[in-house]
Figure 1 (cartoon, one colour):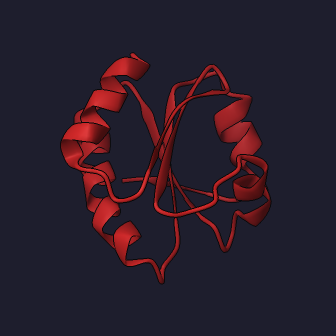
Figure 2: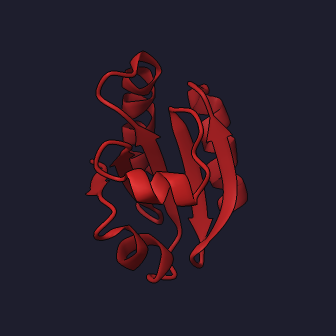
Figure 3: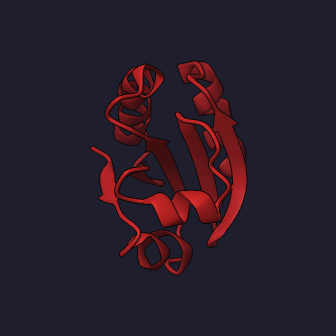
Length: 104
């Protein structure tokens, strides 16, 4: 399960926590996002060492803009509150896993 994130809690949960996060930026109307969500959820179930979140651009517009999210779906990986990697588009489960491996 992915933790729902909003502008109100994103900084506290992701940036200030110092934990490793994978955050899927998406929207309900986005077909590619619908394809990505189960891939990210499967990784969340397999990787209890990472935190996983989902930020709908409708409820997280300031955060998406501040991070320069220009297209969705996008998965941003954070390490110690800083962006460590970014995947844009509906990438494969293998690409997601490789990115998670690099995150540590």
